[in-house]
Amino acid sequence: MKIKVQTKGGSYDFDCGPEESLLYAGLRNGLSLPYECATGTCGTCRARVVEGKTHLEWADAPGMSYVKQEKKEILMCQTRARGDCTLRVPGKMTGEIKRDRWPSYFVGQVNNYRLVTHDVSLFDVKLDKPTSFDAGQFVLLESDEVVGTRAYSMVNYDRETNKLVFVIKRKHDGKFSDWIFDNNVEGKSIKIFGPLGCATFHPKENKNILCIAGGSGIAGMMAIVSHGCQSSYFKTHNGFIFFGVRSKKDIFFLEELSNYVMKYPENLEVTIALSEETNATGLQECYQNLRFATGFVHAVVSEHMTDKYLDMLAYVAGPPPMVDSALRMLVLEAKFPGTDIRYDKFT
Ligand SMILES: Cc1cc2nc3c(=O)[nH]c(=O)nc-3n(C[C@H](O)[C@H](O)[C@H](O)COP(=O)(O)OP(=O)(O)OC[C@H]3O[C@@H](n4cnc5c(N)ncnc54)[C@H](O)[C@@H]3O)c2cc1C
Ligand code: FES
Image (cartoon, rainbow, N blue to C red; front, side, top):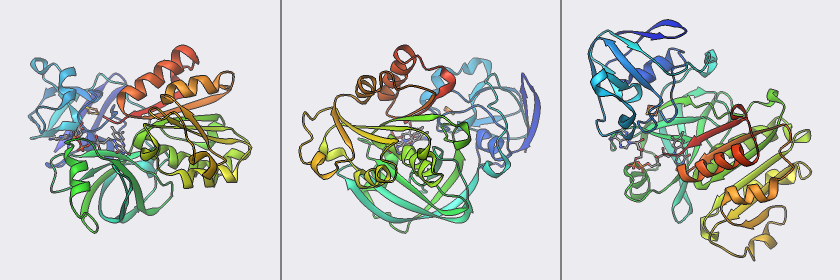
């Protein structure tokens, strides 16, 4: 099917298959259509159908509250074409997607599945063909046994790789995370679409970095730190990583973070913020090159970072309330310009 997209900057055409969403078809054709979650919650991919028939896949998507259905508005990530269509997109096109980062479809197999806390699992997905992605990007995972796609950030950073690594936190009554935790998923087949997302790290930007993560939000930050270490970035730039969890039993990746700090003890600093624990006895002795603090992660950042925000990019990821608090602190208190903040809300 032929899709025409009208934007303020001009018109674009692309082909769309019958089984894919309009957003994914546009992105895999290299068009930088507006989106954030790519999974029906944020409303960023809003468009108006000017001509043609479409079908909404998930009628109850939370993002539909941003859409005026009486004006034929749709969420491109949740809508399929039923024939040739013309769409008008009000959102901003986000610039060119580099040719080697155009997202595409993959088939993968779950490997090395293991629990890292009582409610967080870590596993690899072995892909049917290699891919490259930027540190901080995510992909969509889909199982035949669960309706809809879910977004997950890559923990690893590699080029031309067949392996993606993920951490998934169990959500109460969450369909995909229940599927991951309650079934023996080792060896199971999974569909993937990506890479996606703009909360990415690029050494050529030449700035100090601040990463603020809540819970599984540490996933993309691990990729950023990994890329920073692989490219010797922390020889010449400061990296401040803040990882917020509730209590000791929710912490993971301490060994990995400690190893990264060991490589660049002068410039790389990692702080674990425990919101429901008043002392970190035991942990501090075991991990002497990490810092432990008490409080919500945005408050711990605020307290520790005063006067250190020089020439800095900030990355934020995790549950929406935690991300909102961190963004408010960065904008109102630390006076970050919006262009120097990149974030993913794990909706
Ligand atoms: C950019 C981004 C990166 C993320 N990275 C991570 C990560 O690294 N680790 C992590 O643990 N979590 C991550 N998340 C959150 C993750 O995508 C899931 O929301 C979370 O795992 C809960 O999924 P669930 O199926 O268990 O819960 P559910 O409540 O069942 O579903 C949660 C989400 O799945 C989608 N969904 C639900 N039902 C349908 C349906 N019928 N049709 C279509 N879509 C549906 C919606 O987006 C919904 O908000 C990320 C989210 C985003 C947006
Ligand atoms: S990108 Fe479609 S609702 Fe978020």
